Length: 456
Ligand SMILES: [Zn+2]
Image 1 (cartoon, rainbow, N blue to C red):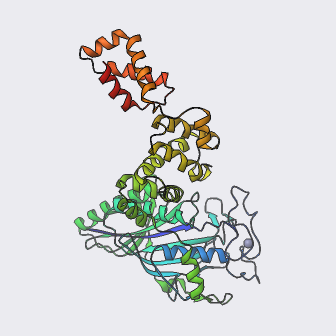
Image 2: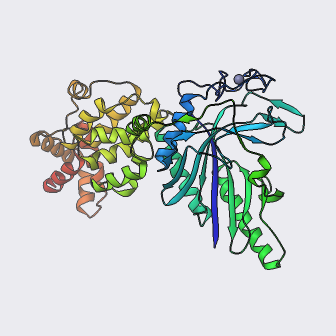
């Protein structure tokens, strides 16, 4: 059996400050020239001291810990993690991980997988060995690290879980979604010692790295070669892992508490405030929706984006939840894609959707009319009830009118009627089409079919 654990790294999404962890430089700067987003602090100039940590980054880290069911540490402390590499101007990284660490959160659990630690640290600079150049733009940008227990037993399980983790963290906009994630993967099969595969950069690479390493470890065990715990690098191009170094221990990093920064007290009222503004998790929402009678697949789609989930919850208070789920999942997502927008760019709200879905639920307009109105709403917002009235889009509920259209269609198409009488069931669809046209799409096709059968 294979056992897999993950160390997941992602950039903290800073909605307000957009500043680095210990200075005023921009943390999110897009594509700019190297070394243009720097100051004495994040380039480690002699005599420079860190500013107090970016409070928004601390808040986000605590929120992530809470979402993953962690116990939040009452005190937070940065340590110096020493190593010598050109990407670290000070010769140490300021991090909440390490041997005497007080991580932001510990002992969590997310969808059956243990969360050992959640912590915050600064990103090192970018060193390019081929040119020897160092770009400090990203030096000091806040990074979040999530360490899982070795609870995974397959690459597929890792991938599914990671997708759900990302959906959950997107609910609180905690991780920068464009910057992606990186992971170190701990993996061992049976008696093989644990191997850490460093710096795997995408979901698909994580799956490939696990499968490749599993295969390699099997071979090692079969050959009875001696092996010990070590660190490997992932070669994405060739799909293999390479030996990197023997596993370093915590002593190698000479952790010491950061003397230039105070210990941060996490007070109860602060925690209570953060907790109160956290949303339900997607897995909790899916369960809730299923209890409302929504099919699992629809419930999962609704819960996959907090915007859809919130819209669903607002609308389903006054419209049939099953109808709401179907329309949001199918039609709302359709027009979002059609208009090449993200869900959060759509201007349509419950203000338009509640009256629209109510009209459909009470058969005041047909589904087809509903779809057309959705298309129009995708372009520009309007008062749905007024629009239906002004454009005379109410479904033909007057039986007399509908019967008149049916009789006309029968009279105008004697050959089609004969075909139908001679057993060609499909011929009736042509007649339905004619009647829909006469009624400007406002007739209910089921009702038309029932009437036609009666009249022919
Ligand atoms: Zn700076």
